[in-house]
Image 1 (cartoon, rainbow, N blue to C red):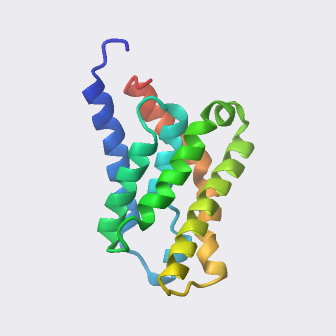
Image 2: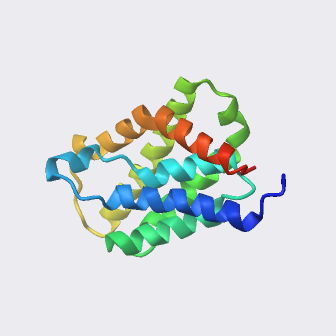
Length: 163
């Protein structure tokens, strides 16, 4: 592990999730909420692909529960969605790593849409209604910004010597 302590790696990965939570909670105009990407989901997908020995399904559950608490949503709603996308990203991490950038972005779109579908399903089960087109724009924005998120987190991983 090149002399890097596991605790330092965990703290660095945790710091990236903290930044994602802050970006998710950052106040903005109401009209812009539909364009806010799933920052926590993007970070989770990256770490499941880049460091599958450190970040996996358990991390997905933990970050999802924290999202449930931060948003005040039904407990387990985000946790379920994050576990599913963490499982898929973790299972396919070797293939996704080999994809060119545009295919990675398309894969991220599919994972984010799965997240949105699970959230929509839970909302339907509890009797909430969801808007139509604006609901899906955050997944598209996530796909568009994936290359930037990937480059930033890859730099963090390399500087922190996280394997």
